[in-house]
Length: 486
Ligand SMILES: NC(=O)C1=CN([C@@H]2O[C@H](COP(=O)(O)OP(=O)(O)OC[C@H]3O[C@@H](n4cnc5c(N)ncnc54)[C@H](O)[C@@H]3O)[C@@H](O)[C@H]2O)C=CC1
Ligand SMILES: O=C(O)/C=C/C=C(\O)C(=O)O
Image 1: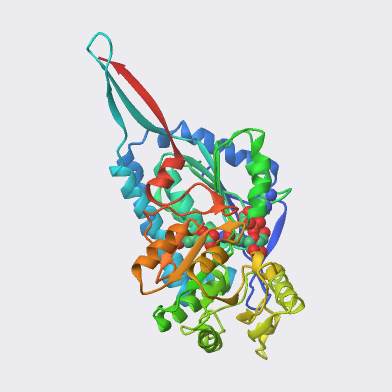
Image 2 (image 1 turned 30 degrees about the vertical axis):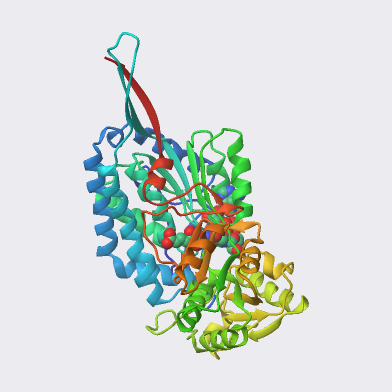
């Protein structure tokens, strides 16, 4: 069988490389296709094509024209919806339910939201008094940063790639994007959609490859990149920061988390159980917003643990293509090794396994895939590594608290500060506790309820800056001030 090859998209053309790597399906470990791996020269070509395109039609296009093209890209994603869903499922093993209700619709929505926002975005204007009494007018004009490097992760491939691309393009920048080596397919389809939509050559460039000593590092250390936006692990964020340091450029980082959920004694019990199960196990726990630490009021603890166990055990772990599948495999064998090493560590650290802790057995080709069981643990101290470190799998540690102050202190006891969930029917308490959370995003009586206009990002080791709505547009455009003497 001849395997298909995914190509780069550079200067409006699909191009191969002499070196290639395999794209593996985590459902069964089988090879899906081969992927071209960009060398330094190709990364440079992509950056220079983007630089050139800034001087071309893209740079002189009106905001309305740019926005219309971005709407065409959204239309193009929707027209090929099933292909995108299939590509995302193949690369990641995520469920049909998730890919078709979250990942791909958000890919299109990201383009629409920012295309519309940029058309109505205003700017500052001040009238300045002058000694001659005539005054001056100061107004700011947002200008694109130039060539933006987009480094995307594998957990929500199209969603997170377009969450960066769409505002960056809407603001008038040109792009060189590198999807994760684990998930090259939906990004390549997106390049086809961009091409069909008539995005001018060089405005959007896509290169495939790995991180260190490969396309990722060549891109982030390139002298002609004007800004870098990255979502992924905090350690990778540090490496990118070091690579970018020499040429001093703006960075937007959305990094790791060790997110807490607090369940108060007055919570709507069923809603809290349902929401916590969702927050621990969505996408196999492979969302930066997922809950890995659950703090439950001591009066509810046993009941809550039992109910959450029931939810975890009722989840259908199965073929991504089955309509009722809740959870697929993890992204890769490498990542499964990491998650399983934490399951082992939890046992060594003295955890009680409420459920899970191992790999499921299917008796078919899935036994060659990267599957793990959803897992709940209790009994660890707050300084156990499993309570401190981001695992990024379907696992949560549950412990108890007695007072509100204690719950806040426990939730905040982390080097990360991305997201938190608070469950209480006392809305004053909800406000009070939310204000004290050292996290960028706090949900009260819900989890992952998204409004694309809101600030999205974390504090502490969880990131730099905010994405979402005007916050994204502010990052991707630099205001220049123009002062006119009247
Ligand atoms: N959204 C999130 O918060 C994510 C967190 N993770 C965590 O990170 C761990 C490692 O997984 P990875 O796939 O290696 O994630 P990663 O954060 O290292 O990779 C994300 C992206 O960065 C690129 N990259 C890696 N090193 C780079 C470098 N030095 N310079 C430029 N680009 C670089 C990768 O090729 C990929 O496109 C996972 O086990 C998981 O715990 C992984 C993916 C997403
Ligand atoms: O924008 C969203 O809805 C989701 C974002 C999720 C991440 O940023 C992540 O998992 O890294």
